[in-house]
Amino acid sequence: MSLLDHPTICSRYFFPRASELADAFFVPVEGAHLACAWFRRHPDAPTILHFHGNGEIVGDYLGDIAEAMLGLGVDVCFAEYRGYGASSGSPTLLSLLQDAEAILRALALPPEQVIVFGRSIGSLPAIHLASCVPALGGLILESGIADLLERLLVRVHPEKDLGCSEQDLAAQVALHFNHQDKLSRYHGPFLALHTLHDHLIHWTHAQRNHDWVASSLKEIVLFEAGDHNSILPYNWHKYWRTIRKFLQNTHAL
Image 1 (cartoon, rainbow, N blue to C red):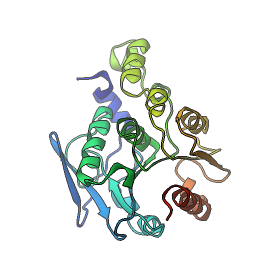
Image 2: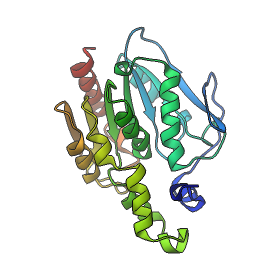
Image 3: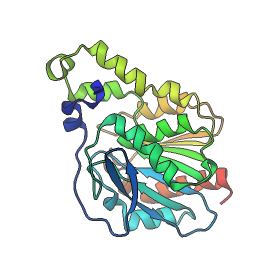
Image 4: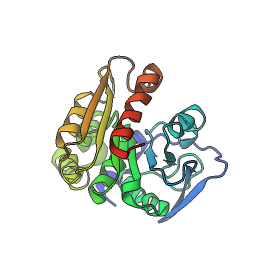
């Protein structure tokens, strides 16, 4: 077992909730199945593959948010994590990466027709996919993480909780979650959304991710209103206008 999949890290970083999901798009992964929600309304349009935060489930995005995304003229697949919603299994940091690859394969779409969207912890699988599939049609990060080690050290003490040194933990993070290296492989369209008053993930994470992306088609938008969990409701209209403009500029919608 990888140090990053230690039970203490998992229990302090993931907050799954069980919930039914009608018409789920099930994706089989090793030892589990993922209950995603795929809405296909626009033939031949790009699809947003969305990865949510660690305290959310796919069901939280159904209704107004799903309709707002579909209203942009794209299809959308809300990806689910192990143990969340109607999915089986238990979530781990490394399974996020492996399962993201499985979900992308299950969509069976040309990569240029997929815009990957990662919110908060969802930025981990989103950045991973951008590094593995640099031909993706776009990458959007909302309240994304640049330095996972920084976030882990807020919640765990390596020696006391994990029985390892901080250097050991840093080495594992660098091996699997080196976002500077991963984003340097991505040359496609990129958009970072963050609030200046994010109390969990400082806005400088967005700046670092933006700077690391190896693309000339990149933008960072920092909102004055809201915090980590209220960035969308406090900036509803500007938020969707920003994404619509990004999609229009990069996909001729």
